[in-house]
Length: 105
Image 1: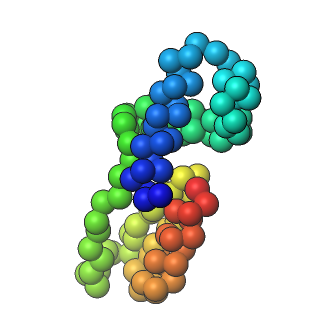
Image 2: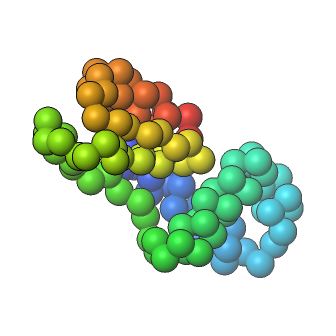
Image 3: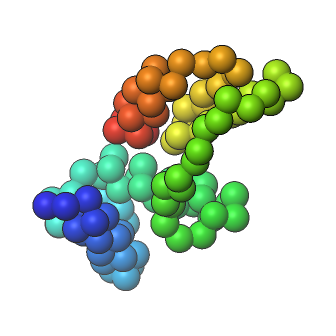
């Protein structure tokens, strides 16, 4: 199953739960879905909406240059994780960290 198909399946699952009018526990037990997964997805959705990020999250392409940032750096948030990137960082290490956090957050 492709990532797009998985994303669509998750969206359909959430929509079906919301349309059911049932509690999370009752709906999840009846549909073979993990309650903890459902609660996590509902919390993520609520957080996105509270932060004015309606709809789906998406990756944006970023270009990193060697330009001097005046020591300010960059803060990257992936899920609940925050990574501070300072001038002179190792790009390969940063890419590994982003991949790892993307997979677990």
